[in-house]
Image 1 (cartoon, one colour):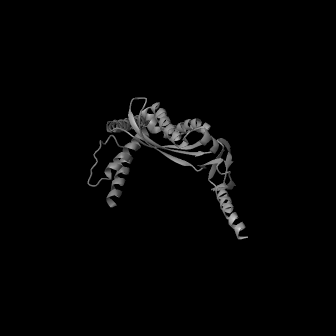
Image 2 (cartoon, one colour):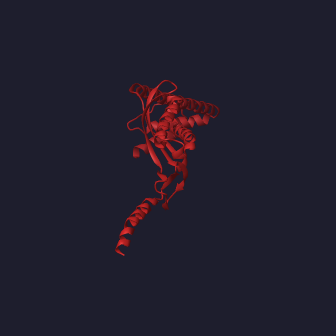
Image 3 (spheres, rainbow, N blue to C red):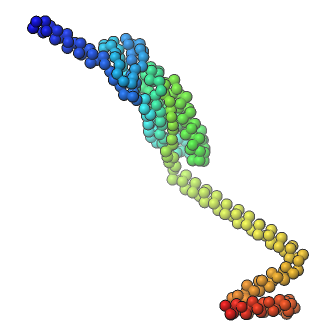
Length: 259
């Protein structure tokens, strides 16, 4: 009996080792690509599954969104201005089998493709468009990357241009341009105000010309406003004002003094 148990012990060790190599487990956000004798066998996960040791080869793939930081790239715009641009690309794997079988290193390939696509798109833009159309540029780069990486089983979920660095000479030129633009708008607003004021004064003059009483009342109002000033004496020609108007003006001056 002792000899029988001793002979089974090595076999039990072998069985245990085989089972330990056969049982695999992956998380919810992971998948495993299985190659059996060099051929794609299938995709497993999440959870626990079995493989054939020494026959199956497994490659684990992460399905979470990956962030790729694109360092500053020197780009020459269409109007021959050199700028440095950096960006962030977000992507995730939607087909693990294609990501392993269609490209040698999907991470490096996506990184390199993001760099070249960023330079190509920005090189077709003028500086003004690059500074003012960030949203459309991000969308354009995302669409191109998504189309390029689709055969690899990769989905590009977003692209964001973080910073655009300009040479100091270009910054000064843009500041001067902005200042000149503000000065132009200021002059236009001032000219429009003068034009509107002149138009209103012309309309008022035409109205007063047709209604002499209105101009007389306006004259009296002006004199009354002048008389509000302390220690101020208003001298007018007697033929300009009628007796009733003079009386009204005197009353207004008296009320002002009493106040």
